[in-house]
Length: 281
Ligand SMILES: NC(=O)c1ccc[n+]([C@@H]2O[C@H](COP(=O)([O-])OP(=O)(O)OC[C@H]3O[C@@H](n4cnc5c(N)ncnc54)[C@H](OP(=O)(O)O)[C@@H]3O)[C@@H](O)[C@H]2O)c1
Image 1: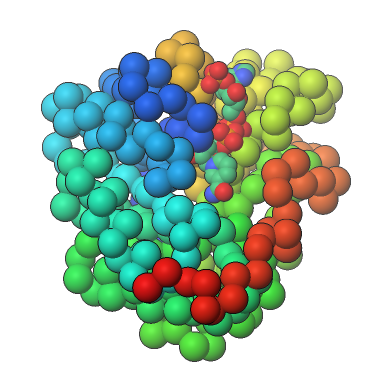
Image 2: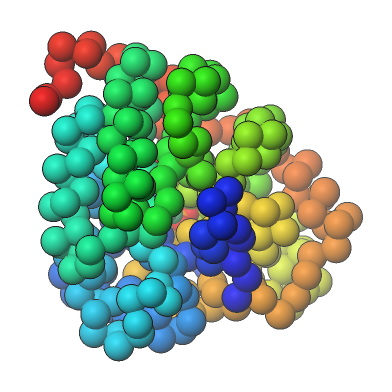
């Protein structure tokens, strides 16, 4: 297992389990439990996924000490605001059965920059209160950060965005590195497109690994946190088998060249513009 270090010194496991669309109840519970048994120590959930309760239950039943597991949750995308960020984290902590999360993310930016800053103030306070060991954002483009960073007391420690071989996010990564912010990928399998790609299939053959392994390893070697999702036990186990090989720098460059700048999930520029008056206080 490899760990990355956030700007505040907190260590984050480089590979975690994604849980978007893992249904609350048996599906999510069994997936998280299997992941923890397989060696994962990092689970990515969100209020919007509706499965925090199952994540929390699986963590508890795993018998692994809480402090060995890195839990991320995210504020509901449609509920920005200072009070919302605070009250919703309290509710999430209850569902997760813990008194802190390791990472609390603002799931989506608003295209009203003032709303992002207003919400971020609560994130800073939650961090200072120890309710979140680290705080960050998700789906933020450079322009969202350029407007946020000059006004914050505490910089986000992570930005979680769509990133895969067809959307390599190099300009964003350069910007983040200059600001001490770690990049985290979602959607690593590009909605299945990676499994159809010949170059990735050849690399899988060359390294005697699966295409999923090549994609996850590619991220790790670029200093990107990877959170592949699966609810299929066999895949959960195999997707994690990425710590006993290294892609050559030529092969990493080869994957870089697959970049099409192709977004398969919602473009953050289409996030709503929320007027300040509409924020629930
Ligand atoms: N911040 C955000 O806005 C945001 C947005 C999207 C996702 N995320 C996070 O990022 C995580 C990953 O993204 P994602 O879930 O959208 O996509 P993903 O991890 O790229 O792909 C998940 C899909 O790939 C399948 N899969 C997994 N391993 C496979 C393998 N070895 N071979 C073939 N198929 C495989 C899964 O099927 P089965 O489950 O049926 O095995 C599932 O359908 C999410 O779960 C979530 O935690 C965050």
